[in-house]
Length: 254
Image (cartoon, rainbow, N blue to C red; front, side, top):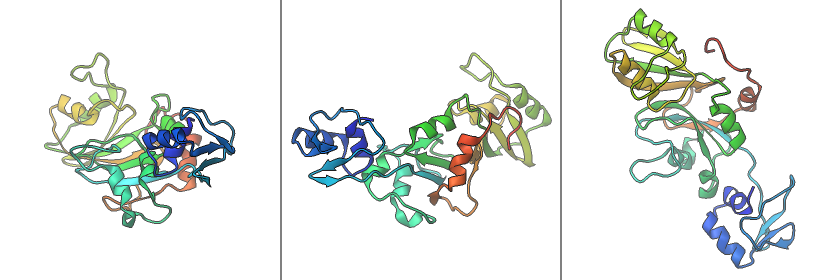
């Protein structure tokens, strides 16, 4: 990892500010003055100092958020509030550590984005490898959504979903999806892909309109029922480990 990224991930300094500090000779790596902000850090326990003060690495963090409507899955946005804004409100944390400064917040990555009007489970982490494992098509993790529709779907809809649909603008059919009937106009759908507006487009292809969309789970991680909209908590160690230890899901969702 580059030293400017390491510092910005573990402090309130932006990368621009880090470059200025490096230029001023205020940054040291293992007691040597850093001359280049793009210098790569090697080793497991680097000693980075700023103004002579050691910088403590945050370590890997993982959060589960119950996203409400009206928030975008981004670190910053010019039109809507973001999920990062919710994490900045420490009072919404349900135990565990809360992000404590803008630098550490900006280091977080959204794992599986949701549309601004979609609610439910959002995961955030500063561990890029874990994020990649969660979102990689090779992992084949199911994403499960509860969907409210304008009219009742039929068993024919269920069959079409399981066979795959050719969406407008696409050259290949969607991978098999699983449809479970909950109520007359409410279903649970499980997909392994993440195409643009996929769930909404799939229902549009069979003549239904999505009125509300709520994500319940990603792979082995389910939204904590104790989290109200806008609230979050740290993932438990067993939840973090369940992602890395999960076999490829090739049959039905859990």
